[in-house]
Length: 191
Image (cartoon, rainbow, N blue to C red; front, top):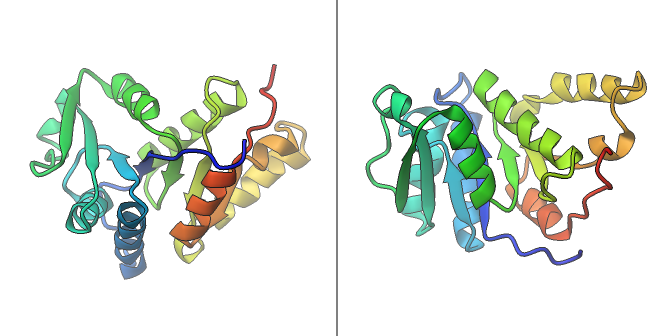
């Protein structure tokens, strides 16, 4: 399946900025890379933290940005008013499903438990054969190093097949992730 068509990518990231300026810089770089490649950004719809930074940078670079936000979070996460499209959905389950449906791949930037939960869910869906879309970690400042060590332990201790670990692209360079997404070949699903 070489030469996948990637038109939209979901980016999961923090609604906070984090402590390192490199996280903000990476959000800008990710957004600019997507926009320059003509790939639409799909994200959580907020205007705060890295979420807002990635949306603003994509818009500034001429990119298409689709935000998906639950009604209960619309005021708490302060929905971004200037997006190409903002969809308000019923709940987090609807948000994640809609983001998955709209996206051809998934990238986790630095973030908290919400970011982890979102990328792990779509990665699991890929393992189960619910979709054939690539997943990646944009690993800025080694943010995901210890998590990746733990994932390797899952493989070593027999709780994950090696090909499911290999489904993940890990890089600190957005361009490398996009190249890998274009070449992605999914493994056979778990069952």
